[in-house]
Each structure stands twice: as C-alpha cells, then as structure tokens.
Image (cartoon, rainbow, N blue to C red):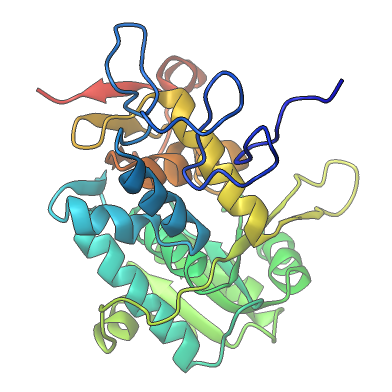
Length: 304
C-alpha cells in the first residue's frame, strides 16, 4: 500500500500548484477551513491567489507578492527601524542590484553578521531572489571564529553590523575572498556603507528573479562548525511548510521574534515564515531572559 503524497503533490503524483491538499491528498480548490468553518487564514481562499503566492515562493519573491497587495502594511518593526512591505521589497531589489553590480551571481555566497534589525530582512529577501546562498553568522563569535565561517562558506560578500565592528573587521581581514563588504548602521573598517550602496540603485522589480538558498553552520561543539547547505528547492519547500501551522492572517497577525535571527529556528519561524505569510514581524534587538524567550515563542498578536 502506497504512502501519502509528499508536500506539494497530488495523490496522483501531479504537482499541487497551490501547495495545499485536502484530506485525500487532492488539491483543495475551495481553500482550507478552520474549526469554525472560516477560510483558513494560512492561505488565501481563492485558488488563483494561492497559486500566485506559490509561484512567488518558487522565485524567492514572497515579499514582492505581499508588497503588491499590502504595500503600506508593516513588514518589520524594531527599535532600529521599520519597513513596510513596499519598502522592504524595494530595498531587497536595490541590494540585489548592488551585489550583481559587484560581480555576484546565482550560486555565490553572502555572509551576514547583523543583529535583529530590518537590514537582516533586506539581505534575506535580496539573496532569496538573486539565487545567492546566505550564511548568517553568530555575532557572539570571536573574529577568528567568524573568519572561519566567512572563509569556509566561500562568501564573496560580507554584510556586517557596526555593533560588531571589531569582530567583523577582524574576520574580513582573514577572509580575502569576501571582497564585497557592506556596513550596516555605521562604520566598519574597510567596509562600504550599506545605506549608501542601496541609495545608488533602483528599487524596481528584478527582470528575472532566481530563487536562492542558505547554508547555516552548526555550533562546532565537536570541532569546527559545519555548514548545512539548504538548496533553493528545499528553501521553497520550507517556506510552504512553515506558513499553514501558524494560522497567520495578513493585515491582522503580528509575529514577535524573541531569538537571534542568525539561529536556524528564529530565522525560519520568526522571519522566513511571517514574511512568506504576509503578517508583520516585531523584532526586538535582544532577549533578556530564557523565560521571555519561552513564553513568547510563536506568539500571534491580533491588532485591534
């Protein structure tokens, strides 16, 4: 007896363009419903709209999808700045052009050492639509430890927060292949200002967006940290799987991020998921206690 169809696949083995299935494994053309019979807030009820979001996920442009539908809705809010979906989308397009102009193309790597702030989301959205491989770096590391990751992931670009200027500069000096260096929020020695680089570029949609991937690193408790590569196809699958369980309602839900975004779980569940689903994300710059992290994880806040 055959097992259930895989994610995004009909029972007959054909792709499900909307990424949703009914109980029998067939595409659900009517849209899912919750226990009260309301349309499932995790996906738009209209099949064409769900298919449009699925298509956007395949090209790394979920933020663009929501920017076209709710441009003035907040995408990221934080003490270090905010972005609406339209602003985040435009900045992602600008950064994609910055990196392309400096020689990066699909398959190249970008290292990121930035605190929880809007620029983290900008870099994520830009790499997702440029075919680039993103490696966030734990900003608690020493310069030597960070340099190992920047070099090992074969980063050609390194985006760093001025908050970690000394570590970032030290890491960059040991990673000569990362010739494109952008400083967020202030100065980092031998880095170009992130905001200035973006200001010189156009925020219009990219002509041919290409889905990117990621390579996160283990903690290295048994030796050197090891890169775990998630190719683009796995990235799209992850995005589709994250959205439904949270029951987000675009325009109403808010997601509170209480962990560092360089970590795999907050990155997936507190940034990739919310930005794919359409609700805004609140991004504290630090976490004060384990209790606050535990009690607030995956919290959904409805605006009034």
